Length: 352
Picture 1 (cartoon, rainbow, N blue to C red):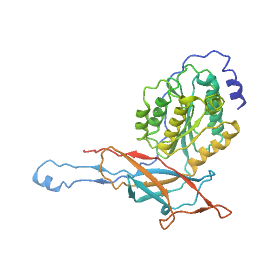
Picture 2 (tube, rainbow, N blue to C red):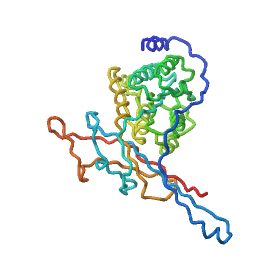
Picture 3 (cartoon, rainbow, N blue to C red):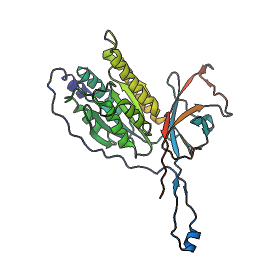
Picture 4 (cartoon, rainbow, N blue to C red):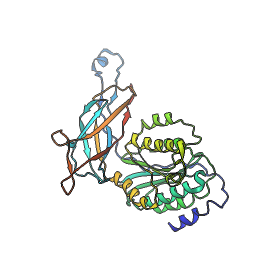
C-alpha cells in the first residue's frame, strides 16, 4: 500500500508515458453447464419407409438469477428458504426449481479507470481502493485486473494470488490518454466473462464519465441485457466534484446515473464515497454481496425462443406467501432491499 501511495503522488508532476499493448485474457476453467432439456421427433416411421430421418432439437435453458437481500443498514438477511422467494417474469409467476446458498469461490475482474481525467486524482483513488479490495479475497477466489482509457488492457490475467494484481496496480501510474471509454471497456470485460460459470462479477472503479467510446450508452445497455455478470461500481470522482461550485454539473450527474444503471440492470450495487474512511466498509460490502447470494434457477413458462428481453422481478415473502416481516434484536420492524438483475434475453431457436 505504501508503494501505491508513493507512486501515485508523482502523477501531477511527471510526464505521461507510452501507451500499453492489449493483452489477451485467459479465463478460469468453466464448471458444469446449466441443465438443459432436449426433445427429439420420432424417426422410426421415416426409417421404415426409406425416407431420410430428421430431428428437431430444442434446448430449454435454466435461467439463473443471483439475489442479495439486505436490510436498510446493509446487514445481509441470511437463512431465507426457497419458499421465501417469488420470481416473476414479464408479470407471470415462475416456479423456482433450483435453489442454493453455497459459499462458492468468486470470479471478479477489477476494471480500473487509467486516464488523465481528474488530474490524476481519479486514478489515485481507483488504484488504491482496488488494493483495499484485494484483502477481501479468499485463497480459492479468482481475480483479474483490467485497465481502460482510450482502449482496455488486461494487466493481470485470472489468478489466485492477489499479490500479482497488486503489482499490476503499482504499474498504473503514467496514463497515456485523456480519454475514458468506460462503455467499451465494460462490454469488453463482460464479453470475456460470458462463458465463465459460477459467481462472477466486475468491480468498476471509475468516474463514470465516457469520452470517446465506440459504443453508445443505448448499445451498452442493450448488451448488458444479455449478460449474467453482476456489475458493482465505486465512483472515484465524488471527492473532487463535491468540492466544486456546481458539484460537477450535468456531466458528473450523467456519469453517476450511468454507473447506477449498470449496477441496477445486473443486480449489483453502487457507491460514491466522499472520504477514504468509507473504503474498507465498501469493499467489505462488495465481497459480502458476492458471498451472501441466493442462487435461484427456473425454466421459463414462456417457451418461445424469440431472442426478446424479458423483465424479471424478485420478491421476498413469508413461508405462506404473505408479506415477510423482519425484526431487529429489539423487536422493531426492518425494511429490506432485494438486489437482482432486472431481466435477461431469451434464446433464439436452434433447428438441427
